[in-house]
Image (cartoon, rainbow, N blue to C red; front, top):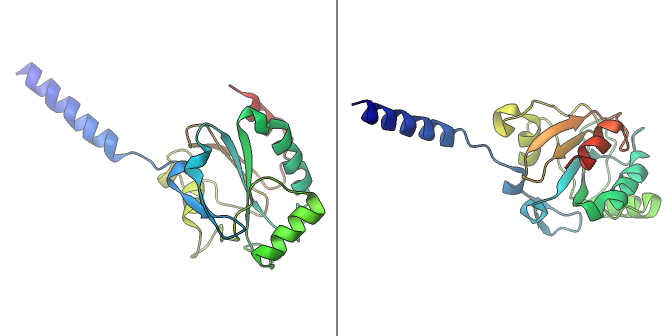
Length: 181
């Protein structure tokens, strides 16, 4: 009898645990700024810094430091991904082509840039719904407050933390996370 109860308890816990499985970063796709599908699962095993960006923001100079960060750590399985968004003060009004031209000519961006999306509101992109909702990611609630909010994704595709828009790319919080094994 005890064995039967134990087995039933174990099975019930297994069912409950599997029902609580959360998606990972790798379950999503995005469209690159060039219009191609970008399967985020191609980044398995890397730490990823996801940043909503804008070309006409007081934080726009962060592009330069994000590029430096990417170049410094890319050989250590790290990548920055930019997601242009026009959700705050109309600070990213351009087309994908205009955004790409701006990023490459003004800031020499070589890290992956995605097509413009919405990072909040009724038309929020599914990736950003996941990033910002503990109910979906299982870790934290972090609604996007402004341009250049940064989400830290670990090598298993789980969101582990975020940094506010004013947090500089070389902030100790971000560097410590990247360098942590």
